[in-house]
Image (cartoon, rainbow, N blue to C red; front, side, top):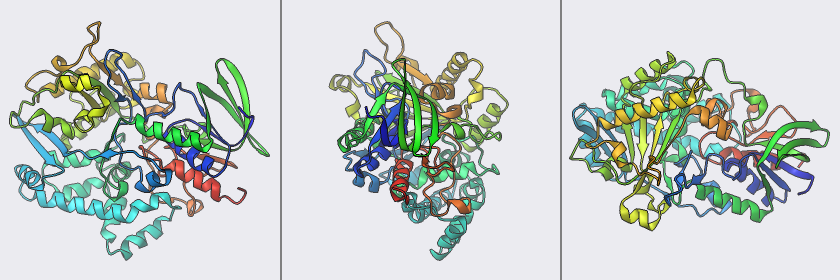
Length: 515
């Protein structure tokens, strides 16, 4: 290892790897320091259960915001698979709402059983989302424009109402003006709840920003399954970075950094040895220390709870007209009606774990069976991922183990109400008879990935535009420290598996006057 680099990147997650690819390809000497034993951060696949050959995307699991343009520029050969079912939502006495990605007539019949006129309102909402995405999506890889410039852009495009509805007013008003069904309102609003500590009418409008990031990716908002698991993205990025000349050190924990006239000095510990290196540019893929103080309003609080499971078979829904493959192929919403979402949020705000946690379930093996061995596929095994909402960090801070066990029990109890057989009976077990199940609370996410307060976006998501005059024309990766940049999720336009802040930081560096 050299002792002097053009760029030192702290954190080897997917954004750090993207930045390394661009910088190394431009001839820069790049070093990544990753504290864990492998690259990828949250974008990794693991054989979680040693007795079974199943590669599970342990943390992040779907891709929407990663731009096709970025894929082409990096030469990635990643197949992103579309799910044929959008969602299934059980409710009432063995009833359920099935929304298809392939059969609009089926979806229309299903939605019209909820409330007259809701199909038209739902289609109007989808058209508004697509129109907003078409105007904004490409800008995520461009310099930031001001708020007023964007407002003018929407007016010039003949859609000034989109700016008002998505940016200026709480998203709850838009949903309630087009949809009357409490169930359908909740399904749509979950895009504003993923990882966000906010309600439909919060004055912070965090729910609006979160909603937009979930519906504008590549102008479609499609959430797709990466073939081979999320770790395949990391593998390809690491290979391209290596071929471009980037280096990395694993198990390297950064202890301190110091700015110097010629750049930065970085102190880190690896294999119990304290080492130092120097670099002209310092890039933070991990959240930098000066950005780690959370907003006292709670906007930065992590609220996500994840359960990874391996099943011997998929359970039959209580609604016998729905097959397991239909119920689990898309997003299975559990207790996520509009009223249930707000009830769970209020319970969590009072410091109590909801008895009926709001959450959703994905079965990736119905879309991408390649993450299982041929033997497991033949036997009918499947993976399941549960993603819980409104389960903030503070609920787990005092006793993480006990709180996590309570959440898992409540989740299973809630889901089993809608199944013809208990989920526990479908779980695979290891050679010791233990269920193949792994739970991750916000406290776990902070400990394992360094996510402040367990926030999967590192902090509350920011708007896609400049919010100060100083940001206009920049890429959102700049800091007020010379040659110090943010290339991870805590950058403006960061968050999710997108590669956007990694690319933007690299481009900002390569375009800076002194490079």
